[in-house]
Image 1 (tube, rainbow, N blue to C red):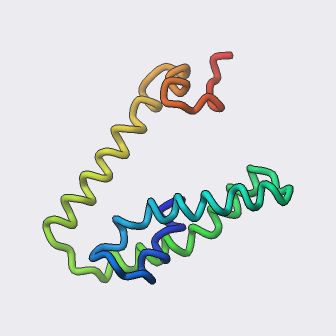
Image 2 (image 1 turned 45 degrees about the vertical axis):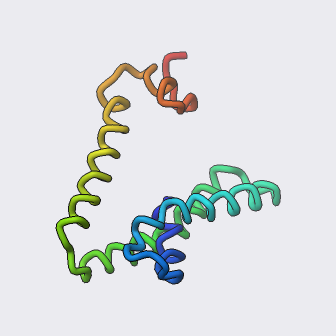
Length: 114
């Protein structure tokens, strides 16, 4: 979601050579503004998440479009592979470990042990 929120902003700014690297921090900053603003207006957090996901969807489509029309170099493929590998290694314990492991990962809301 952070990538989708931040990619259009990074692309408009154009100050980096590869907007995909600047997208997650910019998306996090955008989400950090959207979430409390809507939550303070009385919108439930679950709906704020759905609103943010719907705002992120066009950014993900734009990044996909740009990815297909981008001239890929070895360094770009290396960074993409490293990011995918890191993401899989971060999520893998949740898929392979016991259900209580989600608490160790910091997501106490999905703990099914109690």
